[in-house]
Amino acid sequence: MRSCGKRAIGEFMNKGFYIYIAVILCGWAAIITLNCILTHIWPWLIAVGVIGSTVVVIAIDAVCAHICHVRQSRIDPFSRFFNVSKRQKNVLTRLGIRKLKNYLPDLGVLVKFPKGRIVDPKSKEYVRTYMMESCSGEIGHIFGAFFGFLILLIFPPWIPLFAGYWLSLTLPVALVNFVLCLLPPLALRYNRYSLAQIYLRLEAREKRNTVVSDQ
Image 1 (cartoon, rainbow, N blue to C red):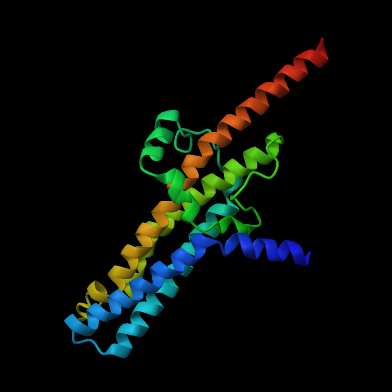
Image 2: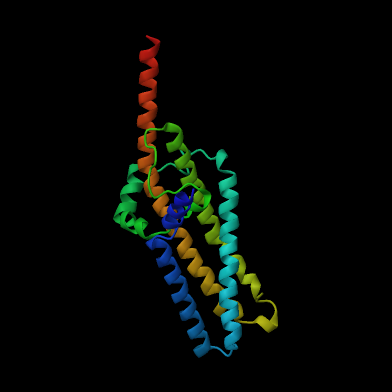
């Protein structure tokens, strides 16, 4: 039990995790520094606003991911939206997603379904579940990217006291979240093409075995 916990922590805190943390810290430093130089906002309010906005946007991402995970049983990984063609995979390959995916954190560990490796490639049920997890992760990240802009309401632009704060504090955080949230769906789609091919082969083999057993 303890070894499984250590393995899960190790899979979550991979190099992608540390890269994300580094990006967030660099984003904080850049936003705070530029605001101190270009605006008249109090430094303590800049720090609180940026860090607070980050906490809120992470909470929004978590809620979106949880809702999509809970409702993933309704997902059809072979539907038109989720299905990945060979042409799409080739485009993603040319965009460098094959290498980029190795530098993204595996958030599937948080729902006890790590996506860093295929544990049971011979099980059709497992591969389909993997695909459904991939689909729910994709849509959860997309929702998180767009709903993350709700943090602009922390400093409502229509309140004179907060005039300009949303532009210099919360908008940059929302934009960083937008970029970080849209990278994982590309990696998930790239992997899902291979998963679909594995699933179809397993399904074809199962049908052949059924025909042979009926004869």
